[in-house]
Length: 116
Image (cartoon, rainbow, N blue to C red; front, side):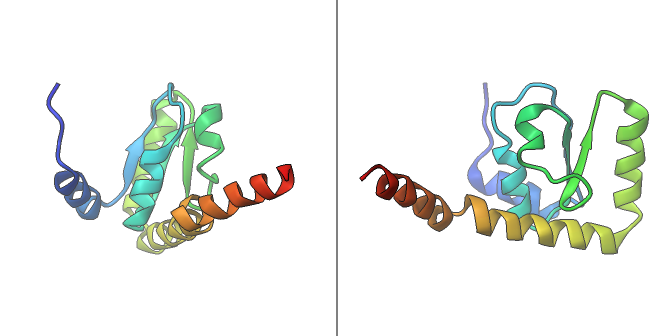
């Protein structure tokens, strides 16, 4: 299987208008955090792993297997620059608050402190 380089992936995320991955099988939605680093609004599948990452109508949309709903959300975001900017900004804030290395280190330290 060929893989794209980190540079190619970053370029694609930077160039896209929205990031849409309505997968029905994911272990963790790390790719959504990557899209938020570029302040992109996201659309993901409404499955447990992704519902823990995407806050519906705050930093993206969660969809079930409905092509109509997926199309609706894609068209809505493509037609609304203000909402795209808002979702992207909120997504970046979530990454910085919950998924940055600093945030992860603080959580890990708190666990160690609690155990001691």
